[in-house]
Image 1 (cartoon, rainbow, N blue to C red):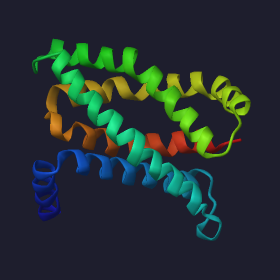
Image 2: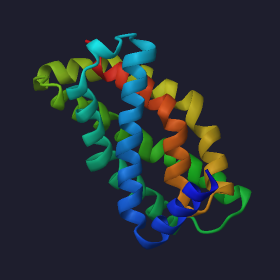
Image 3: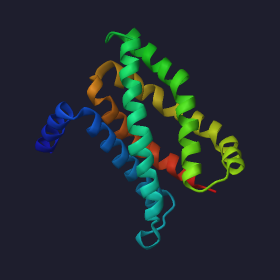
Image 4: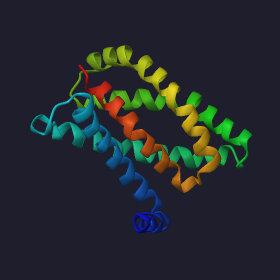
Length: 177
């Protein structure tokens, strides 16, 4: 395990953007597999591989690049490693960034699932507040730890590890018709 972590750190140093994106896409996929197998109890025979591929593509092309970019911007907007800086970053993250990011995630998921604009709007109206409130019950504490203790290049890693559980919930939520 230590060797794997060393390899990961080496790759993060050489290719931070690529590694963050691949990590995000992979872990969104793991979250979908967990949702299908543990929450929905589909079993391997009824696992929807196409759905997992769609969720991974959202991770690769939306979640990874957007979150990675956001953490860079946030680090430039709020400089320092103090408790106050961590609190400011968490508040900006949760109040300014998360509402739009979550709405975008839900809309992209709906579009990839073939929903019409009207169906997607109705699903957003139905699921958005529940997802946002669920977000607020988990992420503020995680982000305080993330912004205070974790170096910038590893923040997306912590978020994505915690997000395996969150992604399981979110992929179940966005794929529930």
